[in-house]
Length: 347
Image (cartoon, rainbow, N blue to C red; front, side, top):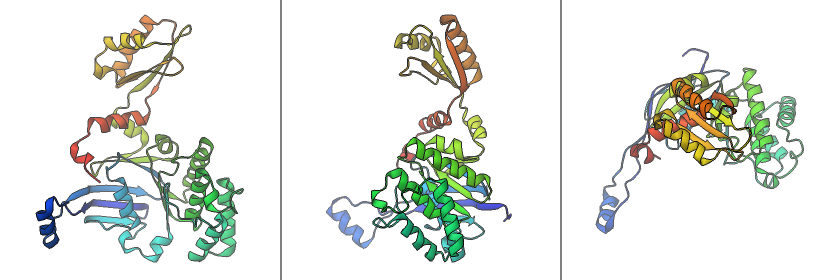
């Protein structure tokens, strides 16, 4: 494996064998003697490489296989087949050297002691990782300052707000200076200020080249702000790995058209008027905003030009702004168009 690769997966698969539910007394008694199991393939031949010093977004709908892949990379689960190398080691062996270089943050789970001050939890982790005292104090001071939690460091975790707790969790996961950190929904429930501080810190650490980050999030702002590349997973397979720009191109994000009238707000009749002129495939969506503007998403350049021509014809004094459609819109359209009973039934 090349030394520049932090993660390398080859033909990686994971199959679960949950026990089938019993129906009726006879089947229940039979299953006690000879249990029946089903096969659920969570990951199917994953091929993926991630270089050191990169911040990578892991995207996919619920049940796509993201959590299973993260658990394999953390060493919590063992692959059914294929090979997986993380930081040059096999994660499921959970060696001391591997775990020391790993950090994990789950937005909905706590790794801090609930009734202890944050500082006491950090001191405990410093002893667990056998950190040099001076280096630990320096690193803690830097993290506390960057994430702006100096005012809560001596408070019990149970009295902290969600944003303060999540930022404290991040400090605890980074206090031993890991090489690789996994962040699962790191900004869930955070206010605007807390999200900004968290994203800016992740950008700073990643740009310095000292940290490799894997972020799973349904908030596309997290992904577009922090990540240099993305991995899109669907049905247990990698559909795309590359830059956000290349993903937008592959999915065909189209363009976003915002229209404002100088003398009145748009009405539903205006939207119906434009909708009747274009086939459904030529206008991905058309909505009225609360401010009275009209928002249209066109799937491609030709559709955009036809829509703009009609807008100029009907509303010559309107103010029009055209930009790339949000990544979230394209991913949503992809998942809606590819929804299958098989994927809905997956864990």
